[in-house]
Image 1 (cartoon, helix red, strand yellow):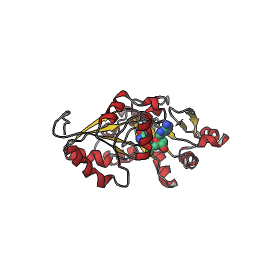
Image 2 (cartoon, rainbow, N blue to C red):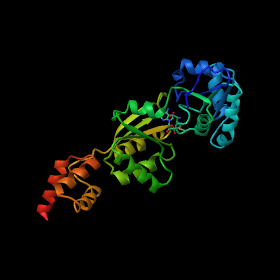
Image 3 (cartoon, rainbow, N blue to C red):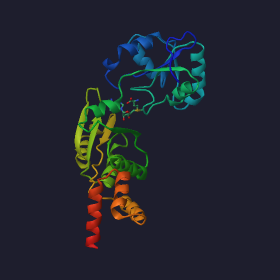
Image 4 (spheres, rainbow, N blue to C red):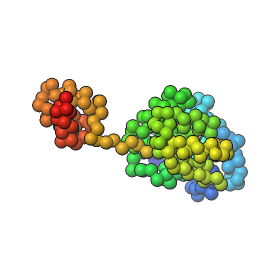
Length: 287
Ligand code: SAM
């Protein structure tokens, strides 16, 4: 559904990013929008109240958080339909990014309401942009799971994806989470931590998981604050053909000549046909 801005009939929902630490990171446009809307839908009205009073903005606020978002969404669309302009903000950063707002925006889209972003800070993007990790492709995975087994699966899948992974971790789980990462990825696995971004004690740490654990254990204060963790994707050695490749080749070569079967499987897995063919011949010779 296309937005038609400045429609005289219905209002606009502005999805407004707010700072993740340094208040100077608020944009001119965010200030203008927050000052001019009829209503601000905030994750925590007291928290947003402090931000608004810092910038001397007087605005009506309404709480829209994880526990009431579903019920409030229709009310917000109704207000937009009545012509009110509304800003959606979370406690920090970009709303909807590991924050409330999905139900509201989804319903607005379903019901054809105007939605427009007022972009700004996002911890994941700020972190990866200074991480030194590959940024041509990356995935954002939200918060790590709470349970150890699920977290180990999460870490394995992250690295196996082959691209940079960015995720959030809380202060009370950071050490247990890194222990899980070491357990399933090995303690030598490279990892990057971005802590307290844009704040006084902003810290980037890049090293092995065991080095990061040692760094955090050196001073308990280092375990406090807000964290983004990042892992590089595993570089797949295309000469080592995994069990999935060999299993498919086994099935397909029953139906066609080996060379052709290697071509089909190589295309499917995005591998080099000749390398696969050579590896299979070598394997056959050694058997
Ligand atoms: N919507 C926010 C955003 O755009 O980044 C994220 C909200 S999420 C509830 C909060 C988590 O984001 C924190 O637990 C931490 O993992 C990460 N985070 C937020 N601010 C941060 C900062 N200044 N430095 C590092 N991580 C931060």
